[in-house]
Image: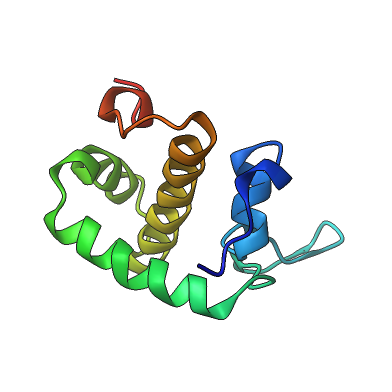
Length: 111
């Protein structure tokens, strides 16, 4: 209910940026490189709903298991994986709303 109409956005990256789940990198010059974090520019309510949804998806959705396992094998921390799932969910939502078609696992995960 807090999200604006998807027709206002050209692509899913803009949609994710509106919510504030895009990565924000900390770097100063060439020698100082800090940890990346989410930008948090968007709605806190939407991120809260996505966070809880991402935890459930991570633990109980078989369609996301290959995605989660790939991130774990890359050595990503648990909270980074949750944020990646949040962003993936937003991309899926955007595709469903923009195309007006139902969820297709093969399209969502490029199988």
